[in-house]
Length: 141
Image (tube, rainbow, N blue to C red; front, side, top):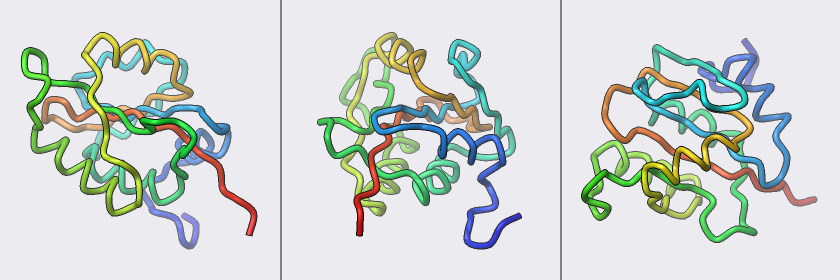
């Protein structure tokens, strides 16, 4: 345990967040996601994706150089649908000053996730509890 850090941030997750560079992406996914497709898998089986997102965003700066620094997987067959878990994730993004997540078609989301620096698989059981985040920079004071 360390002072000032969310206790949900495991050593592996902290290392991934610190090692990522500007423009690198991390994906937080639900329990049903085919997570072994990614480059680095970090598992947090006892947590939900919304709580994990809160912990990650306590440290991760938003990439302001890209138009869509956060993306979610669209509902198959109804791209305009906003599942409750997505609404909750968007509320967390807004509270941290991030723009609302844009939707990506399911297979486009999978492809983007495969190029991510890390995939964090949570124990989230609600469908569509997946979000891709792009790391920004911390400006000088």
